[in-house]
Length: 383
Ligand SMILES: Nc1ncnc2c1ncn2[C@@H]1O[C@H](COP(=O)(O)OP(=O)(O)OP(=O)(O)O)[C@@H](O)[C@H]1O
Image (cartoon, rainbow, N blue to C red):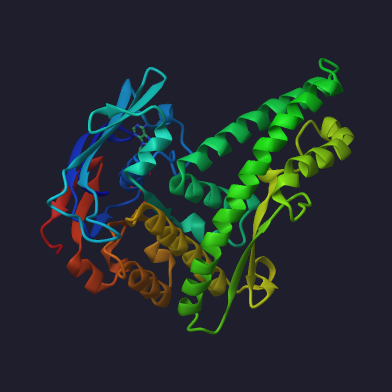
C-alpha cells in the first residue's frame, strides 16, 4: 500500500509525530542526527522485515519511554501498479513494542507473525552502504537477498528463521562436543533435520535468483546503454548435485566430511549461511574487475530489480526509501535512478541533508518536509 498518514509515538527521537504523505515523492530534509533515518526505519518496520539498520526493538523505544507505536494509514493500489484508488477501503497498519512484546494489527486484526505485515506493506531501502554491495562482504549480499525474498514470500522468511535458529543451536552443540559436554552422535541426529531445512532454503534462494537475475540484467543493460552484460548466479558454499531431491543427502555428506574441523572451530563451515551472490560483468567477476562507477550501477540494478520483483509478486510496487543516497551518486546515475523509478507510480521517500543534492525537477514535483529534533513540518515551497 501507499502510506497517506504516518504516526509515530515514542519511536527513537520522536515523542509524538504525525505526517501526511503524498502518493508520489516525499523529501525529508534536515541536518545530521535529526530523525530522518529514524523515520525511514519506522516505515521499514511496517513491512515486517525488521530494522534496515539491524536495530533491536528495545533500542528503537524512545529513551526513558516504555514502548513505541507506529501507525500507518493508506490505500492499496487499484491493481498491478496503478495509482492508489480512492474507491478501495483505507487500510490501517499498527505496530507496537513494549515490555519485551511486539504485536501488529492490520485493520484491527491481530497478526500471528510479524512477517504477515509484508502482505500489506512492502519497502525497498536504498542507503549509501548498498552502494558497496559489489565489493562488500558475502554477508552483505546474502542479507540483500534474504530481505528481498522475505518480503516477496512470507514462507521464505519462515524457512530462513528456522534455519538460523537451527544453525545457532548446531554451533552451540559443536562447542559442547569440543568441551566434551556432548557426543558426536548428538550432532548426527541434529544434522538430518537441518540439512532438509537448508536444502529448502537453498532451493528457494536459487528460484529467487532465477527471477531476479534477468530483471537486473535488463536494468543494467539500460543503465550502461547496452554496452555491458550483468550476470548473477548463486554461489553455494558446498557442491550441489543437479537433482534437488538429493540436496539434503549432499549437505549431510559434506558436513560429515568436515566434522572434525567443525568441532575444532566450533562452527558450521558450509551451508546457506556461508553462500554468496556471484556477480559478473561481461563474463568477468565484478568484485575484482568492475570500476567504482560500474559497481555503483550494479548496486542500482540490484536494488531496482528488487523493486520490480516485489512489484510483480505483490501486484503493487513497494515503497522506495532512499536514505541519503542521492548525494552519493553522480548526476548521471542519479538521473538514471529517478528515470527507472518514474516508470511506475511508486511512492518514494527521500532523505537528504541538502535539497541542492536533488534535481530541481524532482523538487518541484515533491512534497518537502523539514526535520528538526524529532519534529516534522511540511515546507510550503514543495510541490
Ligand atoms: N532510542 C532513541 N531515543 C531517543 N533518541 C534516539 C534514539 N535512538 C536514536 N536517537 C537519536 O536520533 C538521532 C539520529 O537520528 P537519525 O539517525 O534519524 O539521523 P538523521 O537525521 O538521519 O541524520 P544523518 O543525516 O546523520 O543520517 C540522534 O540524535 C540520536 O541521538
